[in-house]
Length: 271
Image: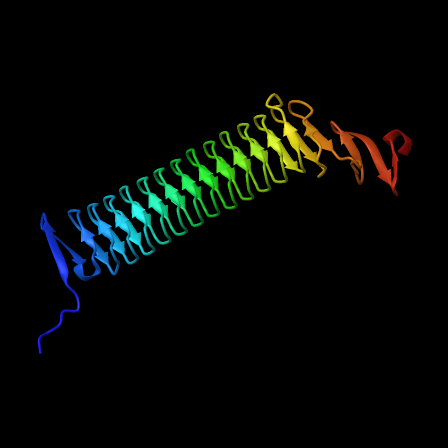
């Protein structure tokens, strides 16, 4: 009985380098060297590129690699896709770990997982989530949905519809928050806007810090009314039912009020 071949290999030798592609799995090697292992209908056109497993994966960047999944592509040098589906790396030294329809075009960029996330800024990263975007150098989105890091080194931790626009700006979480001033910060809440440089919204809803109010801070309640900053380098407390202070109240180091058994006195009365 004639022997049956378990596997047939196409061998291409360029500059003394042997590359093997299992022909029975209909894979295609175009580059000078590389390897496809266990994949189906996958292709390599980059030098020393690799595809390991999966379906219809393509490694066209030099020294790039695809490890599993389906319809993934590495189009730049030293980039990699580790799994998922329809993921694509366009920036050199970039990586997508999993998820679907994710794309990196910045160099040294990363997407952990999620769906339809995009990193175009160099050194940018998205950990996960859906439809998140990093546009500038060093930007980061932790997760959530439809969050945008559009300033250099800006951060959005999570939530949805949040945006960090300027350099070193950040939004912790919440919904529909904007940090557009340089070094501005919105910790959370809803519909908060920090337009001034070095400004911050600590909590609440519908807070607005003017772009003229550098260094301003707002802490407010959750009512759906606009809480506005008071001026540059000010702290605005806006609570419809009042602000309660337990103990003494000081101004510039001098005691203004003191609370004794629930009754408030001035220091002169107490003395």
